Image 1 (tube, rainbow, N blue to C red):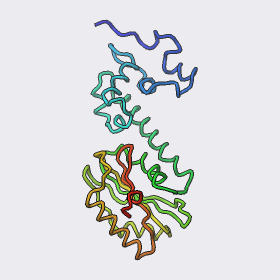
Image 2: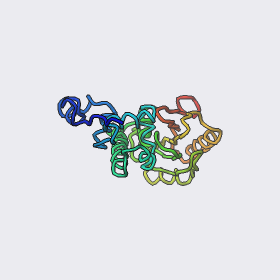
Image 3: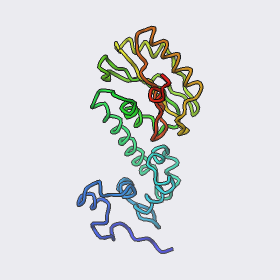
Image 4: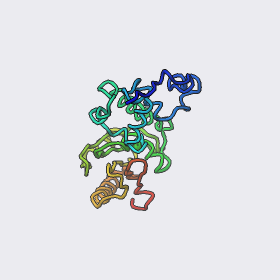
Length: 229
């Protein structure tokens, strides 16, 4: 089979690294950005062509790509351990960067504000996690904490741990959040029962449970918006 032309034979403005320097990072496609990470392709594909194939395998969805592990990436010819690690590290940096952004505002005004805190943290996980956001009297964030981590189908949230953490922080109100790896935003019966019990416990302790957010990939469900809390 005839060997494909390498990136070095392309016009300078078409090479991903040079294109980034000349036109800025926003001018690059996802495949070109991945190609910069892996540096080279294989004997039949350039780095960009290999990157396109990897992305196509994941329906050109970066969220789907972010869920893979190193071994899955290494199934593509031309992707060794070092290249796989580079891709995973870049995706994780992007996730952490998104996670750090919403807290700059520091105040929760609606369900979307709360969801924006947790979406970067939970949207691409293959297991469930339960988190709590702690707020002061002005609805400003004073902390967040992971309460539990479970499997594909559920996790357990201990009310004692939740309200102890809230009392320790002198929180006036809290927002509950967990994710559904299935992508289904609808609350389960267990979700509904737990929310009701935590809401009632909060009333006794004078700590308001303002909302319970369910993150399902790029969507979310709000108990408050749906009149369930």
